[in-house]
View 1 (cartoon, helix red, strand yellow):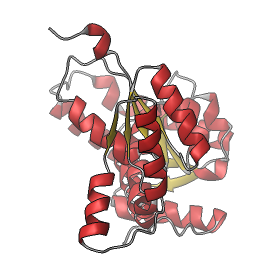
View 2 (cartoon, helix red, strand yellow):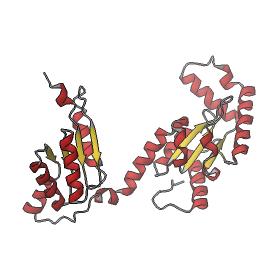
View 3 (cartoon, helix red, strand yellow):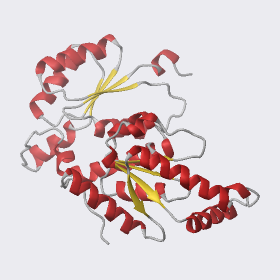
Length: 284
């Protein structure tokens, strides 16, 4: 039987950079043990002897395991020595491979933490932007709207989500907020710079067609109010009042491909705030 106390021993991931690589490696393994109760902590930016001594002391005091991805050879040796002197259990993810590259192949390290991320910054920016879009879809986490580069608002089935995800694939942090009849929009929507908020305008006919298609997929055509022309026009009038109140920019998305709408929005944002070279623009 496993020792329950040992199952709670924390793992500390120590890195000279952000610790993403080490965290991924540890999580990739411990997920194979679904009964584990192991706390996992990242200690990033460890780049001095003083910091190493502080970290090793912390791990020892918590009876933890120290895993490290130190690419700086000198700091790695200092860390390993500190762990051994303090009898701290440790696992070196980088040392054996670095030794092979240097001793067997004769290569020389530049010893720069986070270099992989810097060289592949655009890739990681895209991943972060996609995660941001998914975490801020359909009004989620509206308390963090101020972190958005672009905010889309629209009625149900106006195409907010696919447009958000599409632009996020080019590195833009996009949130979207649904406008629902009878529900007040989050106050954060009116705190963000209105020049970053885009209202998706769609014709009543197209909106009803999109909603009918959705109801048919869900086998729920009994929801008549959702596709009733009078009710839909009331929603549109309410939507327009909110757009006017916020001073938001309107983008007509009726029968437009996502690429066209995305280009239009990104073009306006770039013109207003300056082009951002870390982002790509969709190709029309």
